[in-house]
Length: 233
Length: 233
Image (cartoon, rainbow over all chains, first blue to last red; front, top):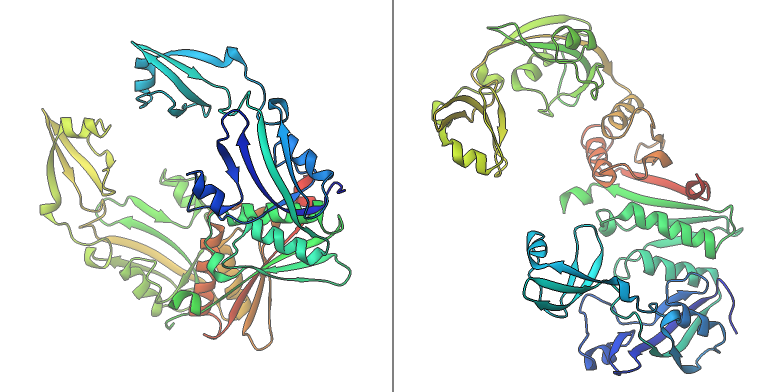
């Protein structure tokens, strides 16, 4: 039995109930078998902080009641996954209008409109294109196999997992936690100085640490050391 | 008499010799008189580090031989300013070609081409446009009035001037220099955490400090402190 703010490391594989199609997995083997392997992704058990709502509702809910190392298979109805289908979100758009946006539609094509919304082309008939603006998984019941492979209890383990989430496993920032746990010093390695969105990552890491790990009145002190070697490499 | 790496704070006003037109000035009053006042710019005496080549050659050269508070007027020939004019850099371009790039030319219009080069429209005759790709000040002799208002000797003054150059006068980073001058700790205020190009500014500040102020084997240690107040404002 787990509770809010617990740090779990979980493995999971999710399928569409009707078709058996794998839609998401933390296992490289499963991803390859299902032909959805993405070489940019790291297939390792994922950090889940309970109450964060990063997972679909039905999946997060089941985690609270699991025991460590217990594998469970759950069926998640649409309303606890990607929502029910809303038929009014199927639109007819003219082919000319899409072409103006640089889109040449074909069935099952995912489209992104200039206003930032997404849809899926259902059919192209003459000059009329049917587009479904529902989430591709809306209306689908899902089957997830899920297992808590590790529970992080120690602050240092939690900080390590959050550094991995927001920075880089390859160039891991070093950290030092004061005894009273009110001051966390994080040294950013020079390989990350020009990392995209570094400042946003610092902000989000700090927010997670303050919200889920250390006392509310703690400080996160980032440190970056520049010396001549940076300019002569 | 000054030498390489000296830190000077200078005031100057530059004019085109032939026309008397003011082209650049550190004086708000002069800028307003000359109708070139730019409200985004701070009109204050400028930091010049000798040997840096940020100023035009003729202007930097004269600074070496000045005395503090001595005002001097110098004439700078084109070759020590913006170069001589190269007649082969005047091109004829078709009006249609410019319009394709979204440019509707008129005389004296500055144009930027899609390849990143700059030019000035000289004339538009029928479908032909004469464009001068020389720098607008190429071939011009300039008259500069220049004065060294302050010389920075102390490391801390120099560091302060460089912080002003690369960060912000409004939210000035605090710094602490170790006694052996090998370690400079700079605390970035939270108002600058999301400053555009913050990481590039840190890099360039560190480079200037290592090149012009502190021993070659020094370290610049940036520090940023995040706490709850950052998320609750």
